[in-house]
Length: 467
Image (tube, rainbow, N blue to C red; front, side):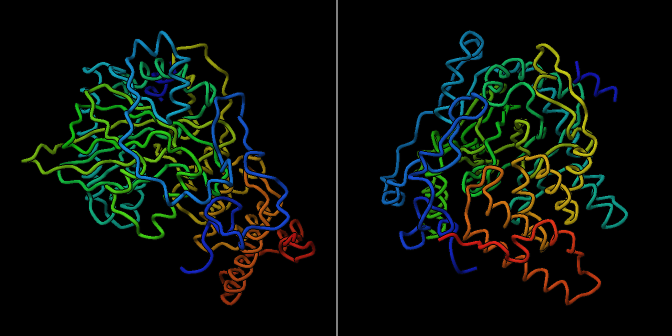
């Protein structure tokens, strides 16, 4: 098995104003939009179950902010034996609800051994970071071991990346053998491993904001699928995961954006608005989740009220050509594994892509040039993930990233619908960034090649606004 081989080795227009969708005013919607409705653009990919990637019907515009708050939706729990006997029913449930919860997915002893390993690995990593000789070394260690060391201003929600060791494989292999028939229906068995980490919270940890791991609006990415495994019993006092079934839709995302923009409601109110339910569970239980589903980690009670360490293993897979905007993996694992490497099925040939691996590792460390280089690499391969990596580079101030985004939106590439208004917005922002850098000669990028290759957005030779 591959697993064991590894052990040996500001103000202004809102987002909705740039979209022809519910939430955009009639005045701001583009005239001459080439499609009658968003439902004309709804499609399935790779013969997978229906995955909504955009708004389906403009007629919903009037009710996004006026729906009656929903009651807590019952979570779709099944037994492991049911999944084995009838994966088709599990696939349908996950497709419809956006989540599927499985009792006794992994044995309790295997989870207990992994929990002990996690505690020792966390203590060792934190000690190594604290003993670092300088700030650069410390920063490198943090990026190696942790995806997010703090949540907000408090060090109470830790995401520890895991190595491919026996304790991890003892959980990962039976888990993937169980859920692979389900995940493969959405992703194929060639789906790449992009997260292998443990979420750790302790008593008193605050609740996460309600969110989706993959945005539907304005990202182009198709959903990833994450599997969580409880490494101990999780009670209501220990901050269980809150899930909002059937919220993996563009309408739900737009509604959350609008409510947040109005500062309308606390975290609890938002969970009620979207029918959130908490997933208290026993050790070895698993949650399969579409990454577009609205969810959050719950807040923990103090120790005297039942709070205690919660360890939640999570693994995420993505389909080829849909690289996410970050990963939670040790560097040596990036680009190395597929779902088929763990599920015990027929082995699949896998040619390693060393350039992809190197660029993904460096970009994930938040180097500006590495982000741009990875985005360019992904765009050349027509990988939808290029859009989000260009956006990350743009947010850090790179003009070339803005210009490539302008061209992508102008042409309608990589899952982004043609949007000349947003294209012009990116073009103007790129020109401003370029001018600002030119005023600092030592930092000014050479853009001559880009101007030659992409005259449409740099020189304005083709009208950007088609109305």
